Length: 353
Image (cartoon, rainbow, N blue to C red; front, side, top):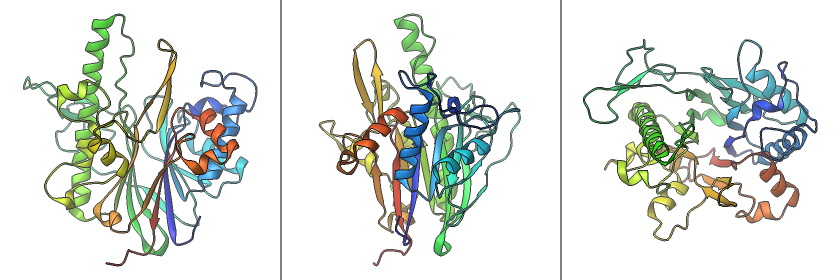
């Protein structure tokens, strides 16, 4: 990694939690992982290859190992980093989730100084309609019946204040928005109903997140919003029903450029007329007996960071020529997760005007 550049990554490491015991020790054996047809040892080794290749200063990990009364996200991730000799060998997390999937940040302590810095007021069960803290409750009318629903994040976004090389200061928000898949549907009608309900909740989470983005942009912060949005422009038929995707909401669509975030892959998807869009995730559809790809993972940045002319990259095993040229890395990306990492290289010196 070049010393004059800061590299950030976003990576959904599918069911990372299943690769550790309660003490945070790796389970490198032939037992099945939570990835279909992949052993725990194979997935663990593949993740080591991917993280080593990324060589990032900081990685926002989606589906990081669990934290509860017995398990520790930080301990597991730091054991993982030590196992593979990663320079990003310290971990930090924020509010724990209600699931076995956390959001955590693995970083190089010689380059970054992050701290958990949540914004917004705590709420009770009644919630708030104005950007409450992400472990709280958001009041929002999802169906225009004048009766606001109560929205919560099962995986609260991770808010970090980060000091980087050269005095660069960043605000990072790691995101794992609600899935829109109709889990639990018993028939076609239930599938549509649950899909619409999940879409509403996903959009409400993105509106909540956008309110926080507005606060940071109004303050002139260098903001990076990164992670898995379980959504993207033009991804499904329900987008027409609601008018726009959650990704568009978070990016911002107002007239003032100073109040918009930017991600080139999202821009390509929004402008595409022939579905020539990047993808960051690959899922097998058993009924169709084929793979489906989607753009779900993003790194969105504020205007001040755009002015530095950063570089984005999706580490896709089939679409990235540099990955294709390294068979070991290509196979590791396929074995490690159903998502592929996205990186952002930020020049530490501001671009000349």
